[in-house]
Image (tube, rainbow, N blue to C red):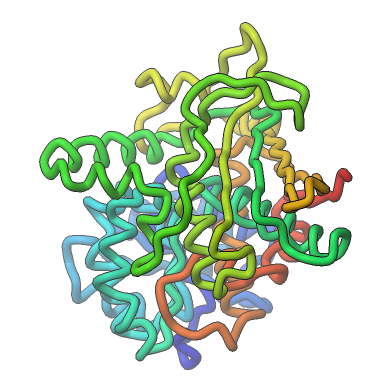
Length: 384
């Protein structure tokens, strides 16, 4: 963290669809000039002013002009911030200069990336620098992968309380979901596929659940690539398109915390199948969904939701069950609140977290669970 900075948080990409929602959340919940000092940043002063007025932010909301193609403008921006939130993806195309600037300056960094090939590269490129400067670089601070990474953490904490210790196996099951992924997520997926075609060695990163745990390779993980019946949820389950991202973050979280779930920990993530009920979310896997910068109406965001159950299984067969639910559509309404509150939690509540490339759960742990429940519409509940 950059303790002398004038802003707690700068929202970079505030004129884009998701960035605008992040800024709107900060404006509505915290105002300007109060306990949270924040600013909006983007390429165009005129567009920033337009978005500021559209979201109802005060006229004196600080605006910063910065461009991903202009490293000096990025460096000037990150020096003014304790933390920078970036919604400008695909990150493997537009993120390198910003994360490098944050790592060098000791400024915290938070993104929404679901691009494991790029995340693996940033660990190699920036982890040591960030350890020296104190920058906490947090990937995947939205629907991928906070509900899943923190869901496993909450399940393991529940197992410790109820069963006397951690469990070596957790199942994540998406029970219901309404609303699509963001256009940016679709673009990130397309960029990742293009990168793999250009460099086939990147496919090995995508296929390895331990691609983000350098020097550690855990045990084979349960298969989650075909339909099966799951007695623990009393339903058929099928592949979940985000599992390839979320599982890597769950294992990196365990790795960063010193393997509190055990070095033999197994995690699989699937979706409960509801016959004849396609959603915008499933359409994303078929090339549908919005383009970057597009998204659902306010009503569609506010009527969206998600519900994920986690079943922790002890070696002796005893089980715990917890759930994570969100009160907005996952890709926009909920994601924008998650990344905003993650940044504030990191800056305000986690001064002792050292620099490095982090998952949000490992960096902030139960402090983030508490803050998301208070301010972001998430619910963590023990079900059994």
